[in-house]
Image 1 (cartoon, helix red, strand yellow):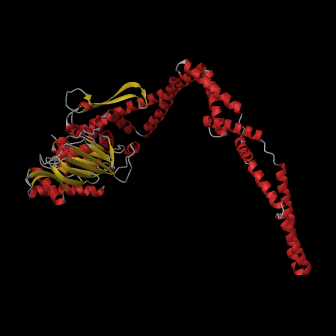
Image 2 (spheres, helix red, strand yellow; image 1 turned 90 degrees about the horizontal axis):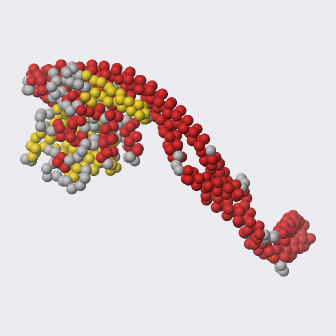
Image 3 (tube, one colour; image 1 turned 135 degrees about the vertical axis):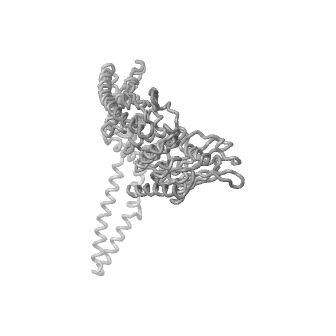
Length: 557
């Protein structure tokens, strides 16, 4: 819903800010007070065309900002698709400058006006100058009908979408594969070369790791040999470790012969001596058995180079190369029996198309049946809304099958006696469009995903009796939607939860317009004036009773 609207330097508005409530909000004001300007500002923030003439005289730029709160999953999808950060609130901003193009922002991110319009259409339905009017959108007309039909039908649509996607995927595959024969021959030659290369490589599982270890050992064998020779020299050279150890052992043995207290130490030295002799012996063995095999190193390095080359082409490791070989083998086998495989794919495409068409026909029959029910409901709603001779018809024109079926849904309407039915998109009257939208939204209240509805001129040419019905319908609709309504009739205004007055006044020698929220007493004065053109004791009492009745109903909801 629309939480707040901030307007700066827009037409005759210097600066104004208003916070709207949930439910039914009504905007009132004398002719010329600026109601249309407020609606222009809302239309602008929802994506309407910006004009430099909208900038207040003497200013370089105009700004409109709206703060929304929404649970609309489609809006959230649009934000994600356009890389816009989702937050607790949705801030839409529009700036118009004299010397540069209009700038649109959503949650601080600059976006094209097309994105702002798409998001705006999802956030609100407006009948003002037929801007953001979903009923004038052919796609939306179909969505209204589908939403009206219900859950099982929507599941069938989801099923159809999957079936059409499967069919189109196969069709696309067939189309892509049916390129010239020379391309297939070239591809087969490449695949055969790759298969031969992988087969010739004959890589074994674990072979790479073992070869890398062996190669490292062979490359380092010279250094190892040098270290072993140095170690052997340290042991056996004059005054080397062996000679020093023998002297050490001899000294400790002589001490033991003089004092038995050194017996344990002497035995430990003797034990260590044996261990050292074994170490010296093993070191000498390694040294004498070392044999650097240059030819083997050459073989290992060549094998590793072959494997590394294959890995760069076909995948990093045994598993990846094996998987790639399996993939190209299957592709090669497919191309070898291309004609046969293509026939299989064509049969599969025909089967998928048949399945999709069967589902599309079920969807068509469901729409056809539901259309009659919706037509009857719409006619009743129109009659209640003072369009007594209103006629409504839903045409299902057959089109080639797509993800939505085989139907093009077009709404037709006639609002006057004796007139033919015309497409709804050709209806020009703002008052009629407002009532038509109210009729639709009343029927669709529980399933409609648009949270904010904006009605303008809905009570033009309306009797008091009809106005009371409209007020009640709006009040009922406000249980599931936020409504912003411009009205001049007390029967409608009194049913609103909140009333906002648009006033024009002189400030510093210039005309400016403001919007303020009215208190209960101010509402009584406003409604009393609407009743008879002036506020007196009798009209104020009538207005008070009208509001009392409305407030009582509000508390009961």
